[in-house]
Length: 227
Image (cartoon, rainbow, N blue to C red):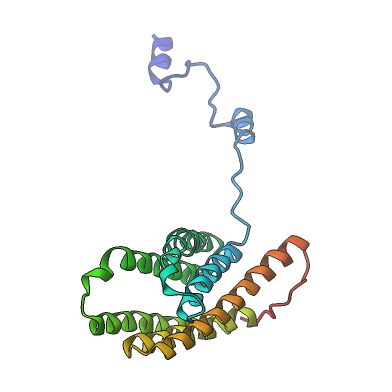
């Protein structure tokens, strides 16, 4: 009778007299077999900056008038895959590192390039009035300029290299926005040249981050700013 009571009260799948794996040496042995999961430690910022730089550079070459607008569709592939998705992923990984600034910036600009791709691919043709189209694009760009302006203020506690990128980018958005709204090619071309400068600054920041990390010392200065 006593043995039958022990059998009924033992946990399912374990003999009545078997050792309890949640206690003592058995538990410690099982804990030793647990695989440790290490947090992500690599910096996603160089990827985000590089994706932003290349896509901005190619689009700015066309905006500046240095190349014919007939080749402009080449930007769409970059906007989707590199400026869009790669930068969006970099923003998600920045959330994992605890970098609020990087997460906000890369996720936002990844979404910017994806929205640019979607607009050019699917929706621009629906706005047949050129004046309305110019005003709409101008509003879109100026809105991004406002976002970039307040991110520039936050960048003043990141590094000089990053602050230069955001200052130039805010200027690029505003100038391009005004140029599109006014249908003024000369202003758009000026915005294109500023965009080229922005891309170069972003490339430098990416190059410095990759090189300094790989060499384990400061090879290219970015002048960190105190938080």
